[in-house]
Length: 194
Image (cartoon, rainbow, N blue to C red; front, top):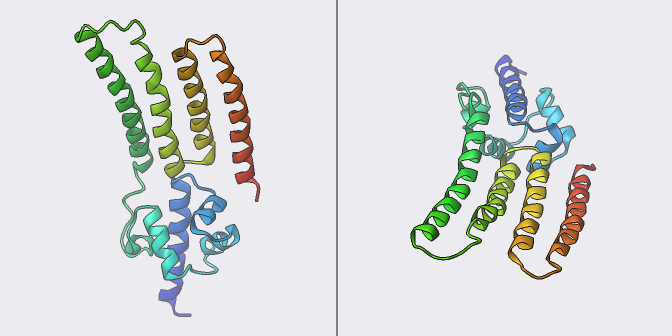
């Protein structure tokens, strides 16, 4: 095998490993996203094989780099700060949910509407923020963060319903939330089992 081919294989192996680690994926998680086995990913990262071009394109798209960068032909600049940017984008998106609640609350007060429970608008912002968190966690981070976000969604929805309904049995919604929480834990446990 020509020396140039070995250098290319080594660059691809190194870049796949570096991009996977900098984005917080295990080999199994990357394999799952690519519909391959973790053994294939391990083989690619050791330089014992190279993914076909379609898989290389998928990896490049997943990590938001070009094929030239993935193959080591140009430098990968995306790595530095991408995790920080994701955290900031996530926080800003959650902040927008709270801002929307604050604007709605201020509008109710400024309009002179008599609504003694207007403070519930901030409680309603919690499930909205949790939905945003579920989406970003599923896209960018490990399953544990998605599971935590789903748990926050379950319990914030239960809280919103319990505080909004004036019926005497409104607190029974927490029983439903507890069952949903157990199902959530089981679902993520099932995903983790290989």
